Image (cartoon, rainbow, N blue to C red; front, side):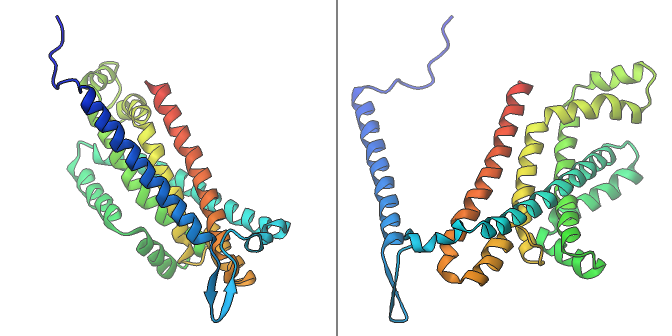
Length: 270
């Protein structure tokens, strides 16, 4: 039995019109990109002086100096260090919230819900500033604790959704083997929920990595503060655009690697 057709197949005229629209849109995008490149490459006037375009070699010559790359490397290491510690904390907090939110005891579940919703609703930057000012932890731990608690609350909700989506037979099988509710959740349900929601969790960890840039505000020497503040202040605004591009490429490279890892995990799970 053939499946019902929900729409008519496009005819030759419709296909030609679709191809024409696609070509026009592609030409418009290319024209816009070319216009942006020409604008950036054109010399510009500033205080009566003619400055070279942003793609001129004189705006990129600082990258021949190994000292510049050493500073950039320090910023990358600081970013990855804060992100790595915050990821471990976020996973631990997420597992804790998932366990407490699915507890059968209201005295445990209700306070967990209130704390989790508070952490999810509080802006990350405000949390960093509060930890820095109230606890005097220093910039590194202000960044790590804020990112770990905020993303941990979100991961906890992701894991809770994974637990709810599991068949009831998993819990009943654990209980029938003589395990307690806590043991069943720890050894049977949570591992399955974690594996099922792993691609979503990795995607949230990518967001955590990008949010380390908020450490710029609280004085943590992550990548953006190292390049856009320290190096720019030393070498001058002449290199601001080139430093911006290098910083953007590094962030894109790191995040694309994590995103590729998440896609690979999703394929292996399927």
